[in-house]
Length: 282
Image (cartoon, rainbow, N blue to C red; front, side, top):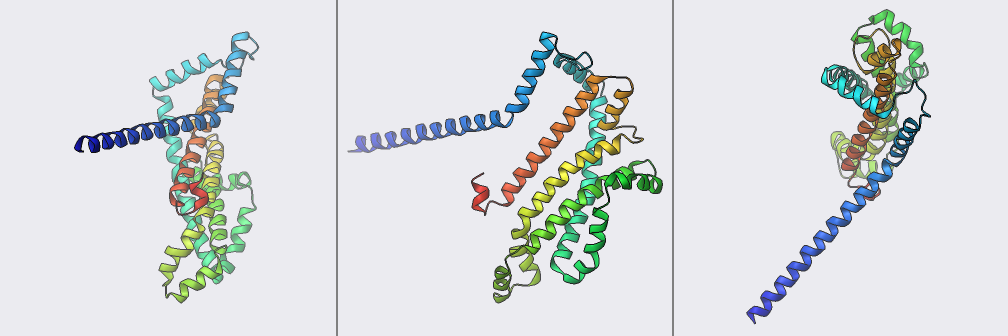
């Protein structure tokens, strides 16, 4: 009897182990498939680029993959790439922190309080309608060509997406949920923490993703104007000497930074929205 129980237990344990291995293999295959789909177009473009370089159809001014690789290794070894990348990242995330936090706070205030909305919303919309490049000469005159002007440009560009989406998210909260919160006697802070913020987080994170994209776009402009360091400066300096390999490398770095930051934002959104079935399915 004891041997039969032991055999049955061993058989169940073996089935569990095989089942877990099969499940892990399935997850791995699914993850690999998704990764290939995500990077399919960049891989195809890279293969096409390699084919053009091998067959001699590639424009002489455009670098080949091996030239780009050698340039990357050289800039890594002499520390140029690390220095410029560090400067660009500090500028980008400092400007994003300033503009994003300001937009988030004002979006909450205008979304929750009608008086604040009446006072602030109109001037904010007026400033939003002015193109960033039109503001650029004024920013340079007021703040000079140092780091301050660059941070202000980035902060202005990242402010509006987060502000507008925070405002929209709060104003889109179901009124019945707010009434229910009042019935249960929730304080203003409890109402915000348990109903308003969770209901608006999806819209807020959309604004955050938009701000991340705008960060890299305006960073290119900021670093091509009287900058002495940064990826944009590296590309501008290379343009003066027709160093196409460095220019293409700068473009690739901006593209990778944009993709990586968006991936981080998407992952953070999924974690914050785990309670929502729609996000658990993605």
